[in-house]
Image (cartoon, rainbow, N blue to C red; front, side):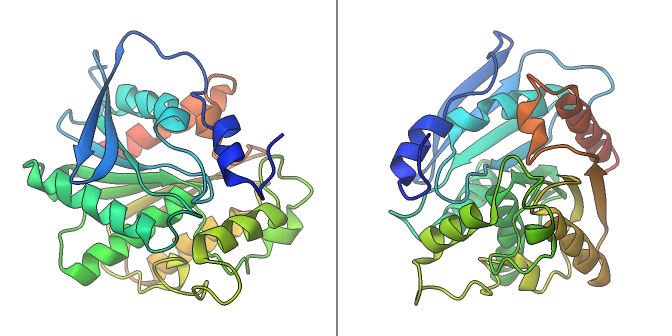
Length: 284
């Protein structure tokens, strides 16, 4: 098994697509103004799916250190199928070669590229998991700072929103979480922020839990009940609602970290994606 001290080896072992890639799923690699990306779409859609003009910008997880087009292609086609949407998976730069704020910059570039393609912001959904979930919120806050239009909605799977690791569930669920440990989170954070003496983990675009969360789009957050990052989701939803937004928390009993990624093995994964599609159908 790869060591968290060797992110390059970790990428190699954790980068394969999970499950089969069906013939109905279609991919197209694109250059999003310097950011590598891939369109993922589904050839057929159900009659009760979300509007077909919706585009999902997906920011993958992996602790800002690994993950990418291959690891999240399976989740992307399931989102495309259930939500009747094209999904753009952004291959943002990873640490330790590219530390903060490289990932944030690439997320903004990918979003602006979508706008430049003539896709209106009200047709864009920003989505992400784990580190990509935190990055998704950071993107929304950055768009507000830049005066750019917000997407119509945001969907987050087990987002990592607090790099200070202050959530009580970090320790409370340390023995229950089969996917993540406090030590792993510390290592990922240090690689992303440049280690001791690097970026302050309370920096809002690194830990968007500490950002001004007002005037952000409707947000749907799914998380497992025994995750170390459970409180990152709970506190994010609370703060979004306190800031005048509309955020919904969906806690799934005993589900592992980013369980929709495990849909080939867990029926709850597909059920969660269907829940996302239902949420998106309410967004106009």
